[in-house]
Length: 191
Image (cartoon, helix red, strand yellow):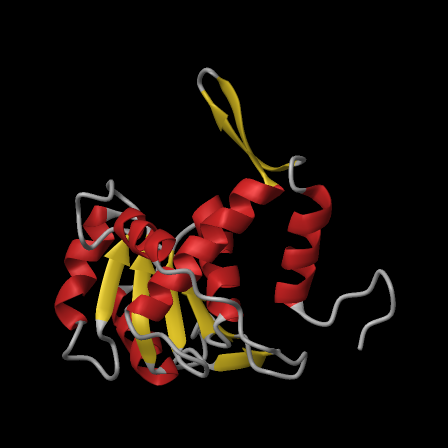
């Protein structure tokens, strides 16, 4: 058990921060009209919706959720939602070669993949059901009317909340793959 002020693991850190700092600003996005801010509470709600949505599509403890995206709030929300299920995150870069994505998806045994754009989705969606354990490919590009969107997954999650699983600090929460400059990318396990 952590001492007062310390965290047991990443999900504990998020949940306690949301409770303590709910209405404070957490992430800001610079737009033409100025800054748009998201609070800890808003971020916590987004994580909760994604966690429940991932559970609804079959992601369970020990499964892997892969992500092809640049830095953005959704990246962090998907990460924390995945961790909250006791699942593992395997992030990849948008500008990697498709053959690297394919190799990593197969190597890590990804069950679900979330990508940043419709363009990437169109390239990788045919891999669902044909590549390893990959069953679902979602994208961040459109609204909830598109059943393959992250927005639709969040709406589904809103309707059926899923609590976080009991976690230990030693559990594997992710794979970070090397660049592959000396051959195939190699996955480094992170707890």
